[in-house]
Length: 137
Image 1 (tube, one colour):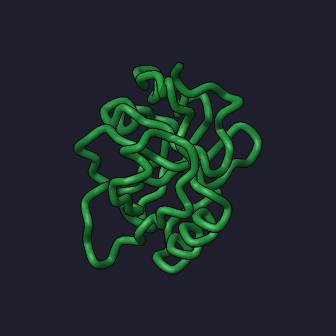
Image 2 (tube, rainbow, N blue to C red):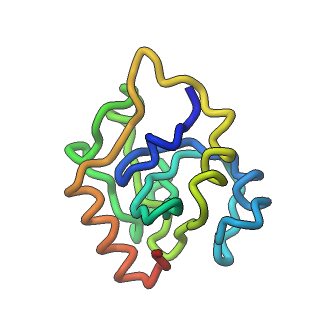
C-alpha cells in the first residue's frame, strides 16, 4: 500500500517517484538534481508539512552511513545492504499531500512492514543536516 498520511512520521521511509518530486511546485528541492526514484526518510514534521532526505546505497566517503542498528523493519535488502544519507544539504520539504502523491506508485512492502530509521539514527541524520546547513521547517 502506498504512503498514507498516518505514515508520515519521523523515521519512516517512503519511495518517491523522482519525476513527480521535482515537478511538484509545492515541494522545495533546493537546487538538488534528482535522477532516480528511491527511498527517502522523514526527518521532521510540523502540522501538514514534512521534511525528507534521500537515502542511497552508493558509498562516498562524505556520506553518513546508516548504521545497521538504526534500521528497523523493512525487507532483508534494506537491513543488509549498505545504506547512506544521500546529502545532508539536500532536504525536501513541503505539504504531506505532495509527498503522498509522489509515493503513489510505491510497491507493497508485504510480507514486510515499512522500513524506518530509529530515533538514534534520526538524531545522527539531523546532526548531519545541521552540519551541512540543510534546510528544515
